[in-house]
Length: 63
Image (cartoon, rainbow, N blue to C red; front, side, top):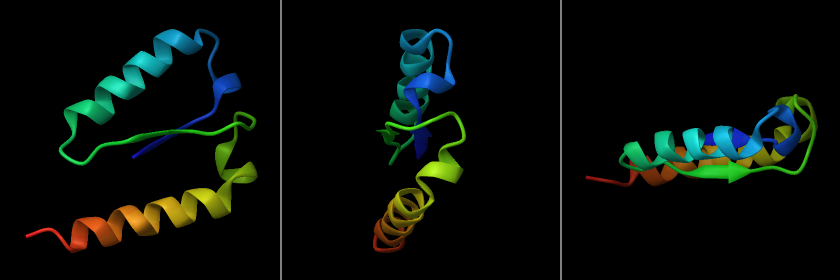
């Protein structure tokens, strides 16, 4: 799981493609785009925590 902020990268399209490729290469990968500053953990910590917990719970339910 990758959380991405649009202003955290100089070349957003290049980095978005790279992050999406990494998520696509993972069995349960996903890319979540956040509309906040570079330090996503400072701005969207509740969202990141909620998303991570849901992601882990989903993995725990898989055979």
